[in-house]
Length: 197
Image (cartoon, rainbow, N blue to C red; front, side, top):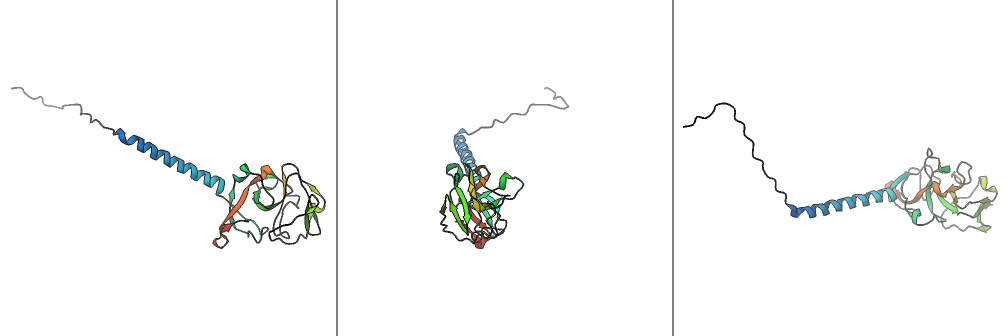
């Protein structure tokens, strides 16, 4: 008979073999890919169509009111150029420290703008506007013809008696590079919710 040794006995634990079921690997890969695509689409939607900007002042009455929160379409002008009548969001003179301004485009690049007796003239012809505006009491720097360069826009607020816009030297003509995007939807307050025209 053999005697068992007293004392500590060390033995190597048996390694359990982990079996990986490879048949699920393609399904997991497809699932991860779909999640990544959804996240990318959500990011693009928010970045290009869902940037929020608050309206400061009542210069765009009756379309927008002080404190209204609007969404800005930032991608639209990558595919097309800003048009007359568009309501744009920009920083005056490209000043990053200024708040965003929201105004309507009246004059396009290369045109001549002049305001005579409460009427806007583009290249000598009276501009017909199909949106509600107030009278122009102060023509500001537009008392003489303003020639727009190839990358400049002339903008006005719809409430022209209470608007700081291209008639003011502090704002002046808006260069294309200063345009942040097109205001397209009012999301707050609830009573103002809707597309911007």
